[in-house]
Image 1 (cartoon, rainbow, N blue to C red):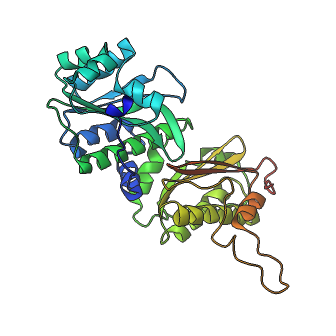
Image 2 (cartoon, rainbow, N blue to C red):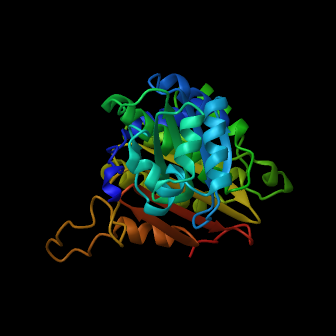
Image 3 (cartoon, rainbow, N blue to C red):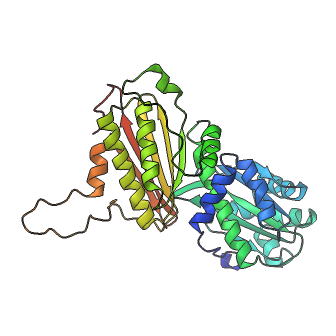
Length: 342
């Protein structure tokens, strides 16, 4: 019965998602405001969100009075497309709310939505890059009808970008300056930073780093990571290893994750963290480099795989992956001012 209203909005175009994040991040509200102009065939956009498993996601954005009424009705009545998208983890497509099926399916929400002037509603669950949040991006129209394929693709990309910014919020850091610098840095490599090989109290003030990469820019991003790692107190040899591990992880994202990815780098409590994420099709339980499956030749020692290289260069590595992408988080514990790799 539910298939009456469920549909597949299709996959996102990773380049479009990262461009939205680059242009509007880390401002979630600014991203949602842009969505109203990016999808002109809808009258309004709303966003409700919370941690995964939260049965009552909170309203985060409403583009107009109509979308505010719809978000409020869903929160107040515990009924509607956002609740369905959250529970089923599938997009919801109600192209004509006057269909009696919807009054039966959402007996509290449908009358309220029709009263507010909505005639069609759509909801996309917050799920991208291997991460889920409770809630959804909701769209509504004042006339019945389905979204065009182009608007479906844009809505899916807007939802993926919103999911990434919600994931960024979990880190509890101020990313405003990092995004501003990244947007100003046309090369993707950033401006040179004075190097230091000794850990000082100043490392606590090193701002986080955000970069977007593809095959052509990986080397520049690696150089930037090496520079910032030294500012965080890593001795040069350890910074070399850490930057190499980051580069290997980026290479996996480029090869298996759609050719593009995002890198976040930050320090906290004597630890340096780096998260590399993509919106590819996901990976298996083992992270492998492009060279991992090369056959052994002659009597030479077998080449160290990318997975082993990353493990050796870092204190820890965590992988989150599913059909919406992969997220790899590397950690380097530098409590002794060096040799903190595992």
